Image 1: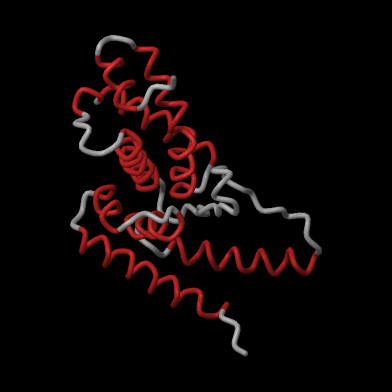
Image 2: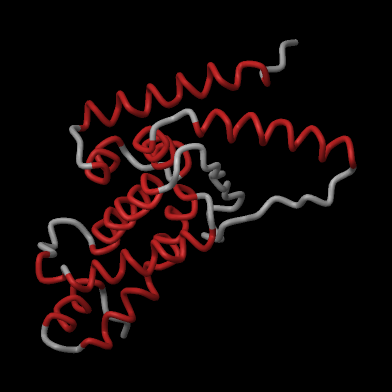
Length: 190
């Protein structure tokens, strides 16, 4: 019989340090996915995963079980990813990855084996998207990613960013408005 998260947390707190590995195995894909989407870099996302689970282990005593372990570690990961993005030098470009098959729970990388015209057009669109995303603040980027790519609720975004729910809603709204203005040249009119 497979143990659930609260049972595993109790085992770790009782001294079974190896039990934490089950939590890492169970939640690392989700943590990596959000870290990759926020940082836009696989190596940075791996570092965020390690940092989040290390912090989670160190702070497990403070885990109150009001929410699930997955939600708790997810919030820690968002904070770690935000810290990493904020540490970057201004002007550092990144890209938010897209997930094409949510049931797979794996980050999908675009196939760049398209024809020359398609490749050129894709690069132009990608450059405009990257430029638009770079105009957002780290908080706006994270709120946008959590809402529109991770499909998190406003309450979850507020908890992850440690802001009021109304502020989270406004942050997502501002991010969407900024992206719409920046990406208006891509709009196809018929």
